[in-house]
Length: 445
Image (cartoon, rainbow, N blue to C red; front, side, top):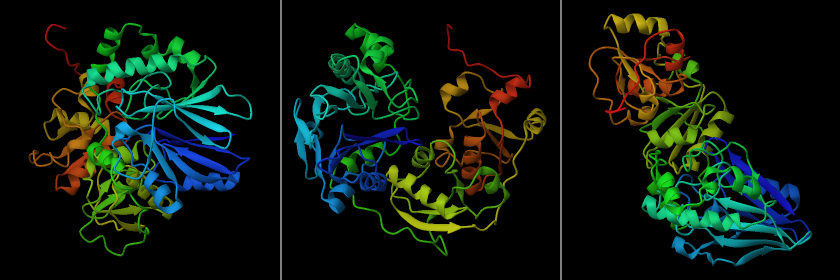
């Protein structure tokens, strides 16, 4: 059996190539839009990709099933409850998709979405018993999926409770390969470990150890996680007619009316960048997700990068979250404007003198754990729609490490606000210096 896991570290998404080297065929489970990785591996293994299996209609990333179907003639399999508008072969509980002597048996596991399925994989070369299970967005390593993205949270949690019980019936030694690892917005407590076993998760995964259905529903349905950006558009694209391959990615001489996305590191951006550019480093964490929070789905983007590799990786990251209108790229971009980073010593002095406004760009739950007195809180992802609410004082942006502060300062500068980021350091460093922070306390606590 050929088995290969692919992980998009930025989105925390996992996909799989499974094939039978004897008959020369393979399928892809939950493909990313960047299908080249599967085709390259299939060629390396001497097999041909003939089909796609979707565990569900994804809400956080654009699927590559359309590219595989249109360009490579692959059959797409998904459960009928997905109401897919593209040509597909509907899956049913208990049905198998066979690739040579490799069998992928469908286990209908609703909860995250009504159509969600897991696939128990058997290698007929060895045994008819399942060797591993691809759990998609049901069972993760160390956690379970969130139930609130497709239906009402409590109804989703009820379905997920029973789906996890079904998966728990598999033998202890069956390996668990999930659809997400740490970094995804589809779960909170999942591990960065890429796999586990049914036995280990049954013993140590908190979602599997809760035996009472009502207790599980309360624990699962009460969260307040961020929803994946572009979620409605991504679901619509993944459910609707096939999305074809992107047009050629070419250099630009002029960005024209496109929004400039500068993907270089924050220090390079601060030293000089094009007027109006927004900085989201491609080598930073969660590039795709951050971009999807800040840019409209139909916004035309011109990429400014330090080299061709940065530009190409940025384009792939944007396409992954259904930002498809990419005008092109520029290397070694112009340096019309600069941003002056600021150190914490100077922040403390200027804040005490009332000469600056300090903007905490973390999420509210992070800020509630400790913030600098007298500062405002607007998460960085909201600043493109909240950039007209600042006075005449310079604005200093701050987060935990400097990553989001840098993005926030670029957004504000692009809109005409005098903004300076704390690039290296943040709230934790402020506290370690002995400076005072305030912890939010609810009434009665």
